[in-house]
Image 1 (cartoon, rainbow, N blue to C red):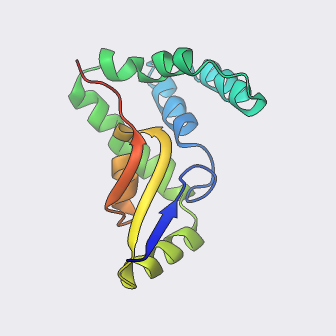
Image 2: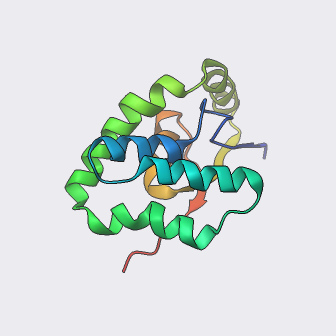
Length: 134
């Protein structure tokens, strides 16, 4: 079995999927995009408090009705992610799929955002952060 592993942010897509989601939510008044960017600066510096970031990043999933979240996620994929998917990324993923390889998307981004991106790219296996549903 041949295995092809792909990262998401700044690899398959040009940019960061969490930042794009936060920016979209900010346009709806559901998140503070500036705070998200501050967390990403901390990440780049190696000083990120992952627990604080996840509480902040996942809070809208707990607060907002699922119908609204799904609508926003659809907009996110169409407006924010599709234009950022690199043509070379589509091509190489397609090559691996056609060759019968097991293609896996591996990312720290949470699964709610990742699943539709993987589907867009015809990637059937995903390893992503799994928020707990209570």
